[in-house]
Each structure stands twice: as structure tokens, then as C-alpha cells.
Length: 256
Image 1: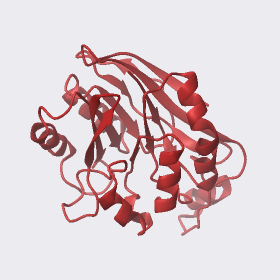
Image 2: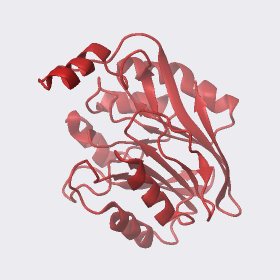
Image 3: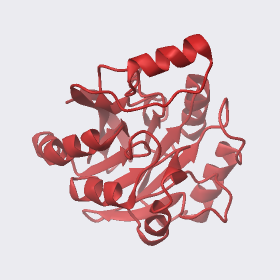
């Protein structure tokens, strides 16, 4: 099975870009399952229900989120109703939505999990123990698992990946919007990349207008961020999974 993971979607034009291109990329690469991180789809901060539905119809089998999950309140109802969009599993139990989902893809039972890092981010439940509990709870109910680690630091992402190596087949990081060049097969057969990168405008700073970000760094004053103009590009990775061994055979970065 070939699995495509697509980096953080930034802004309305990035949603439109995937609407125009995602199915084409899926067909060209014989992709059977696609997961997209959509937490910045609503002009940087959050994702609307309409954005999510558009991404799903455009070829996303699963949408994962992150620290901006609740930036648009209208997403709460969809989070509670749809199996195709999840928020980080280590949010408090009363938070709308769920942190994992079980999907049937061509007869295979796929467990998709979303987790938020805690290093330099929000103080949430331990991501290690949270995912451990999910794997134990769903033992026997899935054929292989996929994990989106939405986190700030590379060390926390790699620590989680090595901890779950061999238990979760496909592991990738999101959040920094910068694609890393460390795609690899871990010792126990899990496919991994520290960050997928983003789907958004390449002329700004991680999708945001450059002048505003520079002003923020220079003055330390509040600044209104807007999505940058110009060319849109999408970054991600393709994981080739051996469904017999449940191990990843290859990981390849992709930019389209």
C-alpha cells in the first residue's frame, strides 16, 4: 500500500491548490491512502468545516490537526461527527472530537492517530502514554497504524518515533512547515520523516507574509499575520508499506 502524507495546509489558496492537484498526484503515484494536516487551512489559524469537507472531497482520506485545532469554532461539530478528521489525542477528554480513528481502506483496517508535542508547546497529557493507551485499547482492531506528531522540536518527534518503531508503521511530523531531509526506515521497520513541510505560499515565511514576521522578530510588538501571496507548493512524503510484513519498504519526499 502506498500512503501519501501531506504537510500543513496554509490558507484558502492552499486548499484550492489541493482541490486542483491532489487527485492527480494520487493517481500518478498509485496512492491508496492520503492523510493531510489541515490545521492552518482557514487563513493560518484553524480549519473551518467547509475547508475540511473540501479537503476530503479533494482526496484526503484523513485530516489531522494540531495546536490550532479550535481556531474556528464551526469545526467542533464536524470533529464530533466525522471519522475522517481527528484532533490531537492528548487534549482533555471533554474537548470536541477524537484523537484517533479507524478507517477501512481497500479491506485494510487503518488506525490513524494525531498527537501534539509538549516541548515548547501547550502543556497537555504525555504524548507517549496517550498513544500507548490508544494502541492497547484498539489492539486487534487494526492492521497497521499511522501517527502524525504535531510538535515543535525535532528531538521530541524522533524520540516518539523511536519509541513506537515497529508498533506504528508510518510516523511523520508536522507543525514547522519546513520539509526535513531525514526520511528513513527505522530499525524495526517504521517509516519516518521529522517534518512533511507545508502546503502553502513559498514566498513568505512558513506561509505568512514576510514583512509581518520580520517586524514581529525585530520589534516584539503584536503584529497581524496574513497568508503570503505568490506561488503555492505542496510538500509531503510517500510511504510504501508492505501489507504482509506491516513494515515500510521506502519513504520518499515529494514536492508538487
